[in-house]
Length: 483
Ligand code: NAP
Image 1 (cartoon, helix red, strand yellow):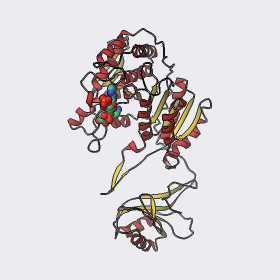
Image 2 (cartoon, helix red, strand yellow):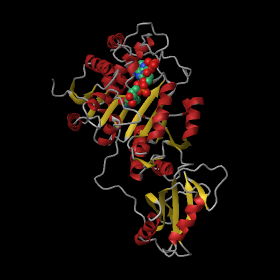
Image 3 (cartoon, protein in one colour):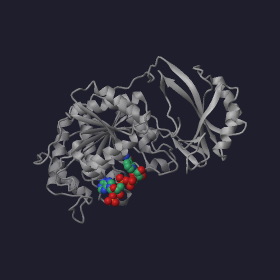
Image 4 (spheres, helix red, strand yellow):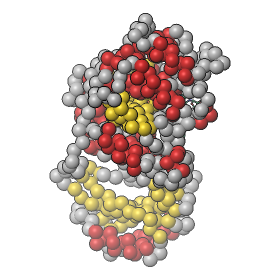
């Protein structure tokens, strides 16, 4: 092994993973790039061995050493049991940026062919609903916390702009649902608007994510980079891969300040696993992103040309329109190797500079505020009673505490003092207490404990949230119908 060989951890993964990873490694080797791979386990086999996270300690140690990963898809048990091994890896190594580029490829027939689609979805990769913080509030009510942080928003936004600089792109749409989730998705929008001022040569636009989905279906060629949250990005990036030929062509990179992990967008496709039918293009394009990341841009462009020439020549795997009945992964791979050194007539690899990835800070992330007040508390309780009964009881409990019951809501809709027509109730209520009377004083912990103790004499309380104001701005949302 030459000493200049690129050290990396290889996770062949599950299902079609080993086949497509083998294809990518074979092509890279044929292109003369020397790799020093450390092949490790993650996913289904690790779960079977009883490893809760799906990622064995040896795999973690390997990645800590190499800080570079080529990864096949990992199966995730759905709806029960263990966490996703993919999410574990992304969170463990804080690969906060998920980059998913798609482009129109020669010879790949889609309804959008000829429109020159070339879009990168930059998806925040560790926060949002995927922080995985879920609770059963009652046996009937599940809750998932959507965590969005200002430092997280700053990092992913800067990354998106730096990515645009590295690839010579000119426009970023930030896609959010800030009209509904004003504090969480709103923070993404506001951070984007703030940071965009540092990059005046890049056009910065905000778009609501539902409109982004519509616009992607109608006029996809208007997009260059789409920056978005974890959940939105998961969905939008599958949509963008659909526009350009499907999951078989969609590569991705998970990039952090320290570790970078490259993988196809697709999963383990168990229906075609082991049959030599998988399209390896997505994993090959992911491997090209890896090569560019480590400065092997020349080899990456040579391989990319060979992939493009192969597609132009009409070589196919089974998922592509016009494929012959037996269109095998290995034949397709060998055709690419045979085309190394040839140049595509129809498409060009993109010029690419190293991305200036925002560095991790050792400090605890925070935002300074000059003034903060606690103006009340939300107590979440479980009850089968009607809101009127609960309202009467809680009003009584609050007497003499300095707090007063303001509103009770159910699934985010106010149901006390007034209840709307046709509001369905479940056994989880949010009960909002605020300072009684016109007093501007802070609510104290002693007041909150007092009211909580009184409530717990009659009701099962589940959790509470302080109502805070930062520099005069409410740090909480109002219930639907709350005045
Ligand atoms: P999937 O594995 O992406 O497969 C969906 C379908 O897409 C396949 O059945 C196959 O369709 C087609 N397909 C995907 N990749 C292809 C390729 N390279 N070549 C040809 N056809 C391809 O999605 P899924 O069935 O929802 O998920 C299966 C498992 O993968 C789950 O356990 C999931 O959690 C996991 N997963 C892992 C990752 C990851 O590791 N990053 C990502 C997504 C899903 P046909 O029916 O046309 O053959």
